Length: 291
Image (cartoon, rainbow, N blue to C red; front, side):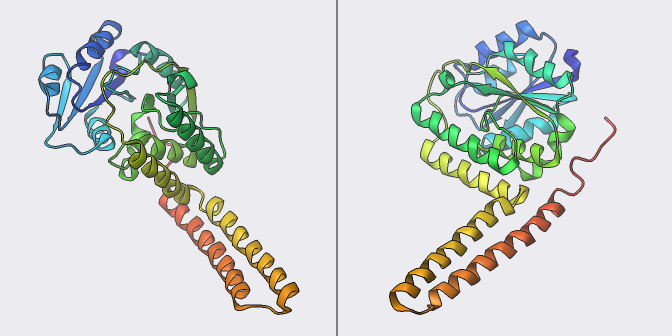
């Protein structure tokens, strides 16, 4: 793939200490590629350092979030394909070639999947395992790294879903599940993430809850019945068990059992309606287009 075919988009917030090393590495591998640095309201010299390199700089007037920075970079990137990566040095630019190789072979998105040694802590490892399993159930395909920010993607197809992407750190969750929803091809490339220097901008508790909410949010857009149907069945059998209990203990059918049965039916029909809304939401996405 020619260097003019793709752009590299890097969101950066207060990464003045690490950004020069990353840009040096990229320039050694890809001397003429377009690099888009999105300065997300940094209070250090991130913007000044970016200007000293031959890059395209997008200055956000204030901090809008990682997802907002990704969208700002994607809007101005000229390449037919976009490589997204972090500015903190965890992503090895040498792995870009493998991601682009998957794109050249026909995939619409290639994601750098981190192994267990790449996780910063046991808590994050278990959290990512849970996210991967839950999202895999939602989409019906194995998702090996839902939250990886290192990926190569077809720019035109990515922009189809920009209106859905949150401004925070969970944009990878939304774009991954959306791609599976419309039948785009996704490949996971094993990578080893390097140790991060400095402190992370992610609050594990706050952003962990947000990731979970995003999974359910996109899940209800993607395949609502996979959420509503199990919930309906659970409420229904709770009603059955409660009815059996009251029947054998008191010899009667209680209002609570009736309420549970009605709630079960309502949840199921809400799921059916949501399924139709999902079809309308994704209408037009994933259709063949002239490249």
